[in-house]
Image 1 (cartoon, rainbow, N blue to C red):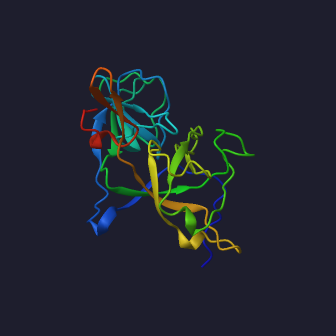
Image 2 (cartoon, rainbow, N blue to C red):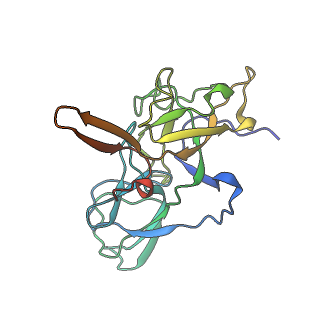
Image 3 (cartoon, one colour):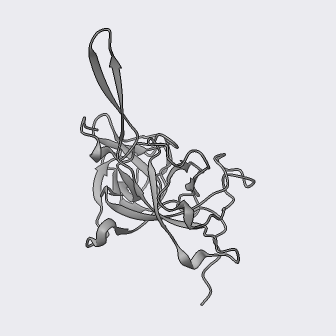
Length: 227
């Protein structure tokens, strides 16, 4: 059976947990602020913001995710009925809006490797790219393409470039390739990834004899200073 052609990124798809842990596909329910003015698509990256609610994480090289958006529910303001939906429609007014999020920091997810960092550009941001197994173990950035209001699916991709793959602040670590996506050159378009932990930068002032630590990027639950 031929593997389906991967023609564009499809967001992040949770598939497993690192280390062979049991994966049940569980999600956590987070509130979405009524009237939140941005679409959030199935497979998008989300984060916790002030007030404990969820918003789309629009970061690329410095994202601070809590997890992957898997849909939502809310009382439809027109029908007054509870509605379950693949994506959050921007500006929806609903006091009971809930996002379903895969928030486990150990989750492994599939993503499509894209050719560049320019969003919604078929010559770069949306065009899939192929790399060899040497990409395993490197860090990567997100490419924030806009999702589809027709399917409700994300179009986020993953981008990794020579010279940037060891950058500690990048949010994603590539742990494997999807072997079924190999082309005739033995390169791969789909990757298996995990979230990176926040990176620490230490600043020392020898004159004042003080030191400070700042944290950047990475999964919010792994940030010891809180979210």
